[in-house]
Image (cartoon, rainbow, N blue to C red; front, side, top):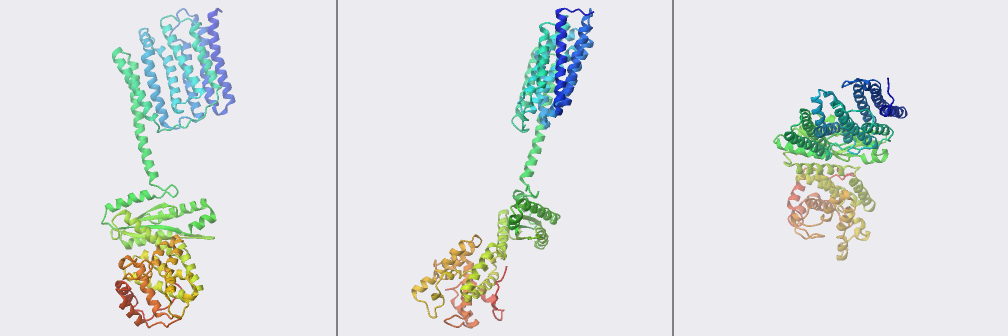
Length: 634
């Protein structure tokens, strides 16, 4: 029979509060679909606790010697797995815990908290529980502590910035832990009386749970799994365990506290091991990203330099390096947009990697530049590069993509990475600038066309000089990549004459001193023309010095000997020969043999003797010089 006194009514009120709190959580579940399962689990746990209260008030409290644990205790304990499952569901519903490291941080923090609480709070409970053979009583406060520890886990997940929901739940479980500790001690010592102030922490705690259910979710914090807390939090937790261990040695605490100390330190070791493995993975990924072109997935310049250094260590095994620059890519980008341009680069990069996969490595240097590092002698490298050049081409409706490339062979032409790269790059740009569609070639064509319109004789003359200069350059062993520059210099050496008056250019007789001074300015004028075109700036120096003399008597700078660029010395010989054999308005051209004799006579004074010898060797087997309307292409 129930006795309706004040204390009994107070106890009923407490468990009614638990039932109402469960109802508020169920209401929250009905309102917020994303968190429905989580709050239903929490509500179920609270209702189980309330039912345990009903059992206690209606039956256990009426017993003369109530058992411990009683049936009510089992219902109260049943609350924790349900609430714990609900909180885990809430974590998932709110998108927390994406990094395994934050779970480990939370475990470390929970164990450190449990160790500290065990040493300072649970020890008296354990002593009395063991003396009374009532170890079960430790289950309730331990469950509260573990729930609080789980809040620490969530705290770690949010970067140690709790929103109102989790902060309120944390305070609630701390109050429950305090209340359950008091309940266990009082139950063991037969000092527990239902109702009164001892129920107040329970009442406040359960009201806080109901309040937490209706708090708005905070913003999802961006947690950096590699931040300072990676080291700080485990070290702080280990320090707590060490300090408790020292206290344990002095005070002789129970085995439970010692076990928690060991578990905390093991968790710290596991966290640090996980950190080490994570950082190795991050370092490997970072190194991989640093060596990889993000667009095409090919190696980048940094990877090329590393592979090139490694290949150089393996010398004398020969290999070659080639730079490729796409022709027509800018027009493709302008016509179809940058997204289409990126897609094209991805396609060409994949095609290049597939074409050279077996015996070479492909790289993207940036922009529309690619590179291939090929193993083997010059013949094998040439075959590989032919496949690479074919892979870097594509044509479609309204566009055509091709490429220019330059090659360096190691160790024959270079024994250092920097030298090999510079050589391949120089040769690639030399080929690119020699192409008819290049900016340099197009500008050269315009200037030569202007010469043709202004002075047809000059037009034919410069084309002849260009062909002769290339032949002499090859005879002197000039690098292949230097020949386009020499060709353009020879073809444009007289471009400054465009600015001269016709009265001087077409004068039938010799020029007077003032006219000669005017004439000699044409090299400087031609230089200024070419300096305005970036692709032709190297040619400008050849044009400026094309009328210098080997003995220093030329113009405009009176350079002598090898101070004169080799290309300019070649142009001077070819220009003089063509001028001698060509008809002028004021004289007829001399025979070829006489012109060759004149070159030999002036060798060492006006002309470089070595260049004259190379010129004569280059033209010795030619029966006659054929004037071509189109210049020799490289």
